Structures are given as structure tokens and as C-alpha cells.
Image 1 (cartoon, protein in one colour):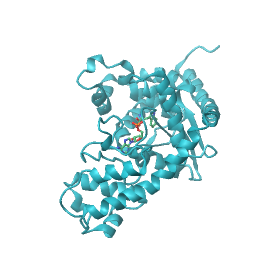
Image 2 (cartoon, rainbow, N blue to C red):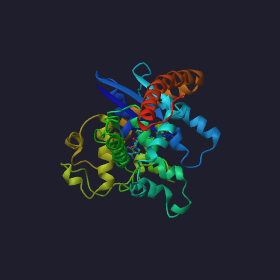
Image 3 (cartoon, rainbow, N blue to C red):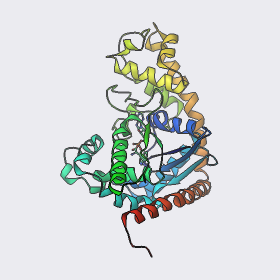
Image 4 (cartoon, rainbow, N blue to C red):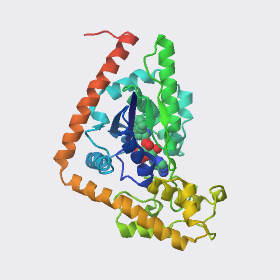
Length: 334
Ligand code: AMP
Ligand code: TRP
């Protein structure tokens, strides 16, 4: 039996990287017969950077709507809000005593997000991977489907789990496996093929948002970075051509095929032919999702109903692990 757990932060809108690197894979996993899937809105992680209360509330529902519009089915997957399950925060505290400062200091995401002023970064931003370990270990998740950028956090979760198990000489926590699937584990900025596509990039032209309309998508792809050469015959020949590689990767991920298949079809053609084809594919794939998302957001009560039901299911599972953990560690019981 596989237990799958993943989440995204409700900060701004989802972009194509989130969809292809994560959500699209989550949808595939919910149809595996031996898998039980939990997908959360990671609002406790969102507050590691400043958030306005109304914006956070709105973004939480928007992410939930994007999950469902993107294909997560509340009858197959448990969809819930991280902060509505108090066990995440409690387990995080318990685990924080097993997480080494030195290892947290090495986290590249912390270094990126804290920037030059690490002295002023909040404790929450530093401890972010410990909360993520709690999210995963609390459900005894076996597999965690994420994009490539989360791999280091998964290693920390495994490390914390192993340290705990060794200390108490029992196999209490499962060591989770990262599940980094498909061709789109790292979608790059449309403006710079060496930088990750990200919600926080100042330039909106760098990313395709899940809420962009057809014209915007086409315009962004048209302006995307490429080079003067045509599409090559082999994937190897894309080395050293980051913008070109990125567009071929996006095409492959949207079409659900390999990069080699894309090149078999387009080798020798120029960007003037490839870009419109990519734009059409992106619009065909994304516009039904955007439409469904907007429809769902017109019925907030329904979203809230789904999140409440999911949070109850997750809460019951989480509570069991927290109780077991408290017992193992020797806490007094009422
Ligand atoms: P975040 O937006 O940081 O909450 O990320 C949500 C999920 O999307 C995580 O699993 C990330 O690894 C994944 N993700 C974010 N950006 C990208 C990207 N540019 N390419 C592929 N996956 C991504
Ligand atoms: N840190 C993840 C991201 O930014 C989101 C996240 C929080 C997560 N908790 C998680 C992902 C647990 C997987 C498992 O993408």
C-alpha cells in the first residue's frame, strides 16, 4: 500500500511549473489502485513569508479550486488545509528537537528566500523543512510527489525520521521516498532558461499562470527565450541551449510524451513553427482547467465543504501518529 502526501503553498497563483512538476502527477497517482492520497494546502508554510489575512484566505480557496480543476477528485483523494489539522504544528515541535541546525543551514531554499539578510529571517523560514517533515511523517507517507526543488527537504525529513527511530529503537516513522516524476521536474523561466519558473519572479512574462487567458499564453510563449538555431534531432543536442530545452520539455510534459518524441516531430523546424504549436497545446490543456477553476470559485461553500470533509479525515489520521509519538517520547497523558 502506498500512502501519498504532498502540498503547495497558497501564495499567488499556480503556474505551469506547479502544474507540470506536481499537480499533473498527483492526479495520476490518485488512480493507482494501491495508493491512498492526501493533498493539502500548505498555509502554515505560506506564513514563513509575510501574508495578508484576506489574501491568505482567498489564496487557500484558490489553490483548492486549482487542485480540483486540475483533476484531483475529492472522492479519490483527501484534500485538506494544513492549518486545520493541529497535529502538524505539534509534531513539528517534537521533531524540531531532532533536526540539526547545521543541516537546516545548508538548505538552498532557505538561503534563496532569506537572501543577503539571513540575520533578519524569521525562525519559521529557517524551520520550514521541519514542518514539512512533520507534514509527511504524521501520515506515515511512503511517497511524496514534488518537483526537483523539494528533494533536499525530503532528505531532511528522512534524516529526522531515522534519527527519531534510532533514538527510541523502533520503526515508528516511515522513511518517505521523493517521487520526482516525468519530464517536467524543473520547468524553467520563459525569460531565462537557467532560472526556475517561480511565483516570486518579478517578471510575469517569465511564467505561465494557470489563470492566464489564451492570448496571454500565446504572447508569453512567443516572447520566450530561444536561440537562432532550429530544433535539433536529439535531446543531447539541446545541451547548452537552456531556452530551447525548456520549451521542448514543456511541450513534452503537456503532451504526455518524451522529449525525444517531440524532436522526432519537430526536428529541423524553426521557432516560428514550434512556438505557435506549443501555444495551441498549452491553451488546449490549460483553458478547461481555468474555466473549471473559475466555476468552482463561484461556489465557495462547495470548496469549503470539500476542505472540511478532507480536514476531518486527515485530522483523524494525524491524531493517531501524534498520540503514538507522545507515548514513545514519554509525555504524561491525561
Ligand atoms: P510551491 O509553489 O513552492 O508551493 O511548489 C509547489 C510544487 O510545485 C512543489 O512540488 C514544487 O516542487 C513544484 N514546482 C514549483 N516550481 C516548479 C518548477 N519550476 N518546475 C517544476 N516543479 C515546480
Ligand atoms: N514546501 C513545499 C513547496 O513549496 C510545499 C509543502 C509543504 C510540501 N509541506 C509539504 C510538499 C509536504 C510535500 C510534502 O513546494
